[in-house]
Image (cartoon, rainbow, N blue to C red; front, side, top):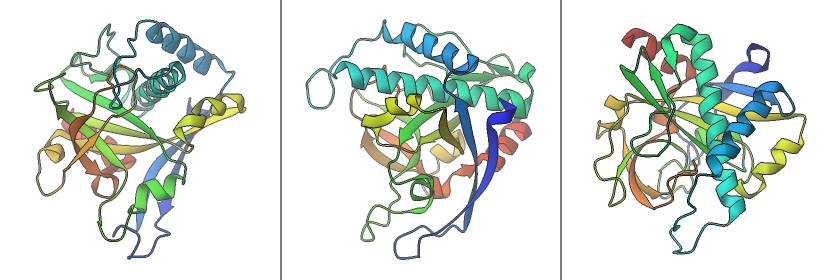
Length: 247
């Protein structure tokens, strides 16, 4: 995995009217060989999970089509295991655990030091590129950033979801509907931006509330989420340092 990692310092290419007030953002770019052993193993894991998923009801009250289920599940599994591999590299493999899970009920994506600290991973597709996700606001009149680090939520499906200690963010640069075509390329590119802490998700001066359905495969009911805009989130260097200082 080390050969596929490139740390970048992204510069804010948007002016103040259309962008956020942040000059730069450090993130990781991963270019993973689609026919390599790592990716083939992840695809196999995703296929096993997909077979257990119930498409359920989406916010349109119609069943999600099979391709949407496949995209949500596969993009989520790739993101989880990519973050797991990165944290093992940055924090030491002895400090990172990938718990097995048969359900989405308070699922823990990654755990640290025998489960004492927990991390949730969320991924999204952005067709306008990584710089748009990191720096651009969707509309000048709102002043709200479009992409966020997605945190805990609560509704009738999972009331009072257990909060995680950290929330990690992955971005794919494509339209969601074309995600599977990334696997037709020699390498699949993704960005790990960093994330946010539980304390940030409980700080009213930082988090916002958004009504959405994050990708991941098992949760398909619209909910109110606490989110931290990427412009206010920890970039990958600060995120890993925050974890190290907490270990």
